[in-house]
Image 1 (spheres, rainbow, N blue to C red):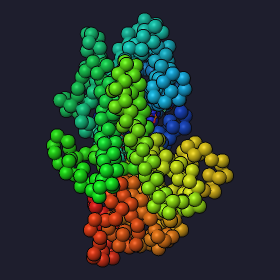
Image 2 (tube, rainbow, N blue to C red):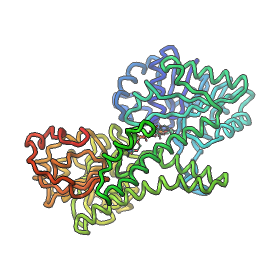
Image 3 (cartoon, rainbow, N blue to C red):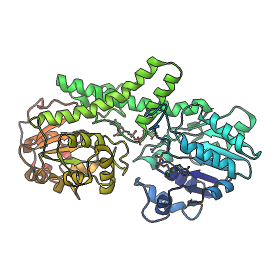
Image 4 (cartoon, rainbow, N blue to C red):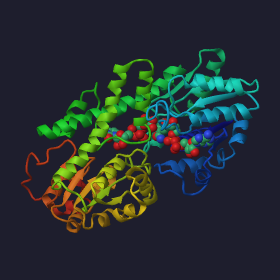
Length: 485
Ligand code: NAD
Ligand code: UGA
């Protein structure tokens, strides 16, 4: 058995590294058209930041894990080909902004059909609309030269930042295949690979369509939870309730569960929005308009939550932020990743720039170039204007220099452990702190003189701090006072 994976991105790289690490006898080649990315996979500086990834890659690279730009060669050699290319929302034509753009996937199928010199199992790893396997099968059969192609669906459920742990101990592995003898045999071959390290009862098999749809549904349900708690965060702010207390109480019910109920400035990432919109498009295609409207609301609440955060900032800062420096803490769409695709920080920064604010942005892992590129595209500002109004600082302290406000947009652990005395000293007064992730030690900050505004929490604390906080807790290591620490 030889494996090839087309697409060396956030999914292709880590998933194949895990398979190679757990199956030393199976050669795994990851190919991509992006030469720089492949060169990085072959270097000491991997192209993506993911905790634990370096070690896994180091275990297998050069032994049975290879990264290459020779797409045709790898296809020809492999018995099983994973397709793990990007499937963004279409930006043009019918279904623009909602339907999945399947250009890359179709190109892969045509390439496989063109160069295959034997039978292949083609595995959909990318997230795809229901019934894509059918289209792939037709393209492969129509263009192949008589070889057998079995198409399986094996959607990936890893989350960035925890990808290695998710791959090592997945809640489930899902494999969809055709209900034919050759379909069953192909499913079994993939089951056998995962069974090397995943308990058999966690490997689920299903029809191809169920498998494809399950992936969209899983992301939709997860995003729905975030939008639900975010919608309730507005009610908490209005009523004086505390969303963390409400979520903790509701989540204690084992039927609800406590995970994924952290209110935030909004969800981001390359997948939630595109997958829900894809689900919506699918519903509309089948004339299920009410179902489509229901899921659309998950995305609308998310957009509203980001706008609400910015409006609160502007209102609080005396209705104008023009010319005011704002220290933006975090740009990645979540902690422990360098990925800023569809990050809520992009929308928040764009809205702040539209109000003529000046931004000093710090993220521990997203590079200044990536931040500038994202904002250049989103804000539509001339280069010189962007240079003048956006600086990407080397740390939080320099970002806070002369700032009127802090805006926490990513829940990086290190933001809990800052020297807030120094930060306060460096800022203009009143010093505002807008916590879009509810990770700062709010009471301690208030005691220092910050005016704190957090998601789903009343602006004026319920029990106005009577005690002086421990001075040591306010300097480096002050996270002890953080509500979630
Ligand atoms: P990515 O953009 O990081 O990587 C995709 C790679 O595919 C790119 O490097 C690109 O150059 C390459 N590629 C595109 N077309 C190609 C072609 N024709 N031949 C060779 N290479 C080609 O994307 P990703 O984040 O890894 O996501 C891949 C798929 O997995 C998407 O469908 C996504 O929805 C799904 N997914 C992503 C995540 C995640 O956490 N990022 C999790 C689960 C599922
Ligand atoms: C998500 C899913 O969790 C994965 O199972 C799936 O494979 C992946 O999408 C995908 O298909 O791409 P990911 O986007 O990497 O993974 O990260 P999540 O942990 O799901 O977070 C998504 C967004 O929701 C982040 O912006 C995060 O900050 C936000 N979020 C999450 C909240 O605001 N509150 C929460 O309680 C949880």
